[in-house]
Amino acid sequence: MKEIYMAKKGALTGLLLFGIFFGAGNLIFPPSLGALSGEHFLPAIAGFVFSGVGIAVLTLIIGTLNPKGYIYEISTKIAPWFATLYLSVLYLSIGPFFAIPRTATTAYEVGISPLLSDANKGLGLIVFTVLYFAAAYLISLNPSKILDRIGRILTPVFAILIVILVVLGAFKYGGTSPQAASAAYQASAFGTGFLEGYNTLDALASVAFSVIAVQTLKQLGFSSKKEYISTIWVVGIVVALAFSALYIGLGFLGNHFPVPAEAMKGGTPGVYILSQATQEIFGSTAQLFLAAMVTVTCFTTTVGLIVSTAEFFNERFPQISYKVYATAFTLIGFAIANLGLDAIIKYSIPVLVILYPITIAIVMIVIVNKFVALSKPGMQLTIAVVTAIAIASVLGSSFKVEFLANLVNALPFAKASLPWLVPAVVGILLSLVLPNKQESDVFEME
Image (cartoon, rainbow, N blue to C red; front, side, top):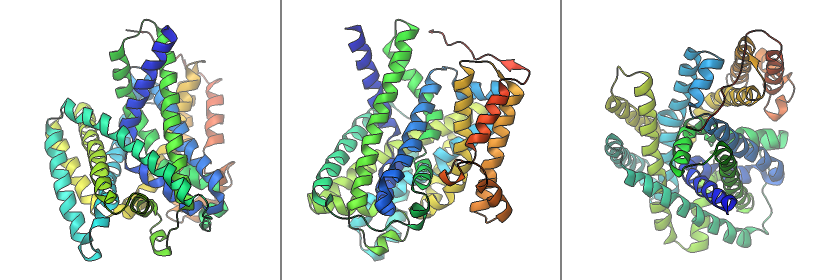
């Protein structure tokens, strides 16, 4: 009976966190991958799930095992200044610069845009984002439990509706042959899918949301450390299974849904696939329901991100008030949202290519340090090397610095988009023998 009760608590918490994580990127990128990967869908979706689910869930689990959070881990293992810099960039990424405007533009593109004529879509985006961000700002100034409860209820309901869409879509379009894969997926399906998983932002969000997970788990009450840790693993399994099933289903829909050439040009045909598939399966009136659901779901995420980002910066830099931070982040999100979804995705990629390897390397260090003592200079060296490779990768690929691109491509697993992996492992191995070793803090139940 105790095991059943423990599993129930883990499952409930897992579903809650699934609702918190579920946002714009989780919705649009899997069908886009399905359409663009063509006949290489299986290795592409494997790479996507590995980075978008596996790394995100592992990051969440490791974060919940330390109630002091990642800021403490990074400060003690690397340096306090690095923790502040890294987390500031991370929060800005999952906040006003990428995720917040993306939720608004996704709500508009999926829900509202299909209801408007082409001539009115530009003005429609401006009007929609003005109303959207005004409402989000007013609520963020005094966030209440009712918003959180709405998000917890509506997001899982919306996810269930997506599952229904995927199942019906599989029966309707499953026999349709995939379109030809794009050049990127033909060159490296797994690696391209792996990088696409970055776009969900979930691994970065896991660093921030692990604090929420700890608070949620504490409210449930645990009789022992063993029960708490076992429940964390149940949470991880539930979140991983839910997201994996959703991603594979949406990817399969995109892989078989007929997409015209003009809808493929922007590189994110997921918006087109979701909107058109909904209308073809459920009828034209279903677009109104889809518009309401996706707008509310994205809206609760927007408010949550404004609040959490403003709270983080107010805590780290208290000279400026929470209200000023909330105002600034809302205005930035509004301005960037009006650039359009494709533009937001395009300029966010270089930052994600830098942040993700650093995040994964930090998680690797924290995991290893829980079992053995590691040298602080060794851990610092590991993060420095991974950061340098990540920056070189962006300069080489995005800014066409040829000699850096050649250096990065010469590293092991570069074709799989993991050029930093072997150097990170070597750095951790060196940390086993270098001086000034640190033991990991022992987790104790409060």
